[in-house]
Amino acid sequence: MPHYKESFFIGLLLFITLLNIYDFYNDFLEYEHSVIHLTVEGLVILISIIGISYLVREIRSRLREIENLRTQLTLTRTDLDETSSKLRQVSRQYGEVIQEQLNVWNLTPSEKQVGLLLLKGLSFEEIANIRETKEKTVRQQATAIYRKSGLDGRYAFAAWFFEDFLG
Image: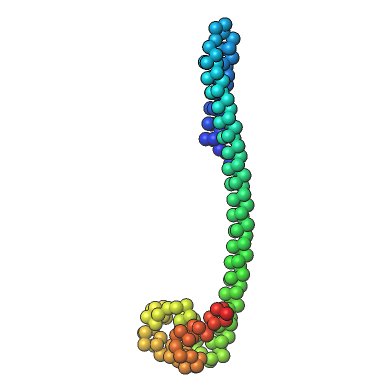
């Protein structure tokens, strides 16, 4: 992954540092050179080199951190894929368990469909819209489900299936 901006600024700082070194060398060769001027130029050169070293170290550190984050992201994606696969498998198995119980209660196909929609938390109105029936019909089917299952209502019906998950 190219880092053009960082490379540009490091190159620019190196160029400026080299110009300062050249200037320092020429000033030093002059017969009458000022010690203060040479000292200032030497400090500028030293600070430039320190700055370049710092930038290079920070860029390397950031690149290592990015690589570590990529590795962690890859591991997390793998874990999520495995978890998602397990959840799909468990969901499929749990759906089979629900279907078996609905069969044990001798529910009609319509009652089974209403029962599943009740377990998903849909209202009677929403179920009626999905099934393209009247809300009264859905209420009657729900009452038949509760009677056949021996449960008191919607919440008891849902709790019967989710009780094992809650421990």
